[in-house]
Image (tube, rainbow, N blue to C red; front, side):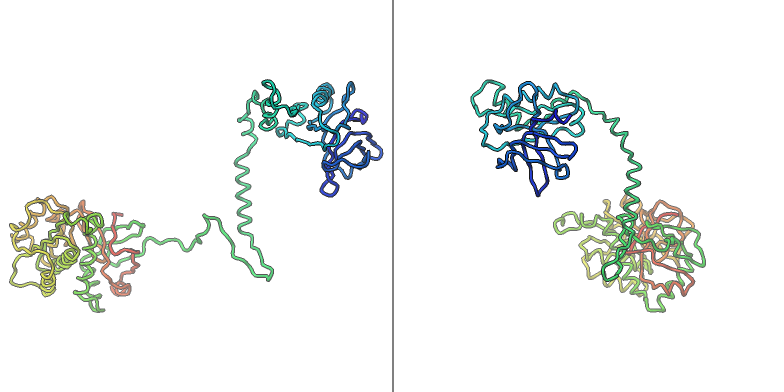
Length: 476
């Protein structure tokens, strides 16, 4: 078998130290595991010696550049530039045809070094598809026939030997069946978990912190307790916030005890009125459109708000809200009947309101006949429910129901009957009171009562407000 390869032109790669040799096989010795090359070239330069012998231990890679032809073998002394071919076993006919094609294309001088142009066969097909015939080299003649030297030049530059595979369809289903997706991903996840939780030590013996994946970087603390507020006297209904925290309702008596305890510790009525006015005005500004409506470039669409107030503490809360709205360029109209005697807090709030650009009327006839943007209802009082029977209260309630404007009620009174004014929003203070079932949406306002004041009246309290001062409540 060794004699079959005598006369073949090969390229032997001996690594970085010895380099690459090319030449004609002159001898193959199985006993000593050596191969000899006649008229060798070393790294493209003609060797001064006529023959070189290599040991099998020094050979890193061996490539056949031209296979010998038993009929008419060309002489390798001419130093013709050849191209490598893949040689499988048992294909002598194809080998002879390859040798003939290279013999006809050899026309270089014997003193020139051989130039090897390697063609990479498709993966997995070098030993299964037989001999891959290299494209013939150009002969230097630029003006040739069609499909001649110019065609060969294009094949050398752009050809990749893949045209023969175009008729074979790729088996997507078969190849996809070879990939076990579940097993691979489970192995990747197991590897990541093990590597992320492995503690590496530095050279000084210091321990680095454990790294976590993107879904493990939050350390779990204690479980969230959604019932953080408990009251000794349950009002009969519970609400919940957007975060799921439970807020129970309280009775009017417990609510009054809470306000009295806060007042003893310094939260006076004036300070409470100011806080309620700021929070209620902020909610009203949001309902009016917020920054989309209240902007210096939109002065021709200033909103109009009507305040319906009575001569009591709830009326003073509404007047405080109206003062803040007027300070924010809102057109405010205050309805307050002429009373011979009013509470001191109401008088103080009216004096402050009179310093704004807001209007004040004492009769329903002076209120706008056309719909306004918002109506704030502060007519009712917790202590005196007989106010609803008076003429000014009934006329103001009728005007609000007929104006077709949305109504915001601040701290409405507790009553088993329906509210005289149908409100769309209801603002409760501190803790919600038990209100009648209605379609109004309930909001809760933080009026600044400290936590220990709640504990003083028997209420276990944790603030449900978070980063806000007014939050919506939903029926639990």
